[in-house]
Length: 342
Figure 1 (cartoon, rainbow, N blue to C red):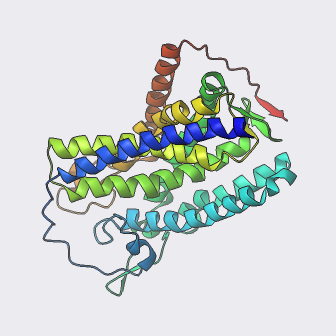
Figure 2: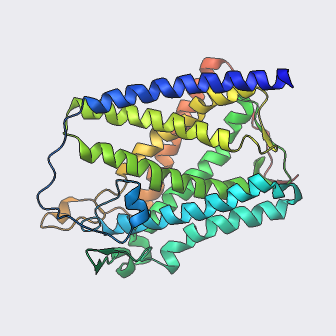
């Protein structure tokens, strides 16, 4: 028992030292910032979202960014739902009774509301500001023009690329493996394609957007804010990767050959995903709610634009992952078949 606990304690100490050091630097960088002057045109508003307001989250402006505001609120509340269900499954260990179809049913069922929302509930969320209802422009636009449609497509494409390609880097570099019963595409459990969608939705739409928006809008423009913004991306990427790895550590059917390497270096490896996608998604379709006399100067983002943007970000990540693999001198082996059941 002592020999099993000692390595894990060492991992915890190493990770605590890394995260505390990074967080300390982050706090120090915040203290050096110059506050931005609040825009005079934005009135003081009181919304109906007391829970999220109590967390002091930097949500989009409900008056000037209603599409993003309503979509992000929907994703925040749905995140509570899927995390609660997933948490129950892990803690209760009812996954021990799952079959390949069970995994598909659970992951597919949890991903479905996010995928169907742009089509069946384009309003996304009914909220009020100072007692007045917020009208989401998505509710009055065609399906292809809705922000929620484009955000869902971006995350779906990104999740697919991440599973289809990046997982093989974890197989090769970190010696990771899935051993639960599953239907597989290219040796990746299809259920993981679906689970990644709602994981990434929470990471990008809720967590990273809120934090990066706080940095972007709270401080005066300049080199200090630029350095803080990109350091925040690095910190958030590493922290997100580590927390996910830690949260599923008790799930016995996703394992690593070397746990220390998985936690310390694997978190950095996984964090490469988010170094690209967190700022990429934050700036994606930034002018979707812009209304003004110069609207023609703002590019309208189409579904094809969304598809190529997600693919472009995916290729950037793939290249970075391969640079790391080449540096480590580890061969990439992709031995999957089209479809298989295990």
